[in-house]
Image (cartoon, rainbow, N blue to C red; front, side, top):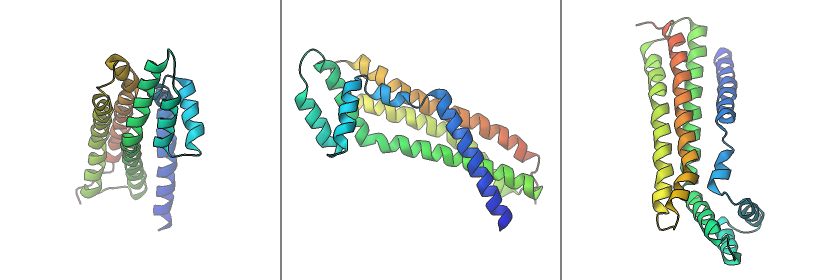
Length: 195
């Protein structure tokens, strides 16, 4: 039991480190910038959301908008509104990608500690490899669903530009995790036993 807890702790620590390093490399902070290019709108939304619900804040910011930047502001508001509705999908995809990396890391430590691994664990390791790119593609599809749902907006090119980084991040993250899991599978394969 103690050995398994050690494997879980090591796996979680290594998986979290790798996952956060990948997020840092591909710049996950650009999601906020790509969702709203108008910094003033973003800060107004953050300040307002501390007091009111998110959708009430969007309505308040939109009603206060005037002047030349109303077109850009309406695109930013549309993206905020749409991503509040589907933002949980991206969080779910990132969580599942982390889970794939965690399971593969755990199986690596388990195979090293037990000196051999049977077919059911090897099948699980194979599953975690194949699910990472699939989740990356699902993130891309979800990102472009946001664009299509906002197709009534005037500037379609701006919508694609703002959502492209979200699509790219999920795809690149899925690819990185695929490569890492493939390397881990190579190491796990050395301890594979038909028994």
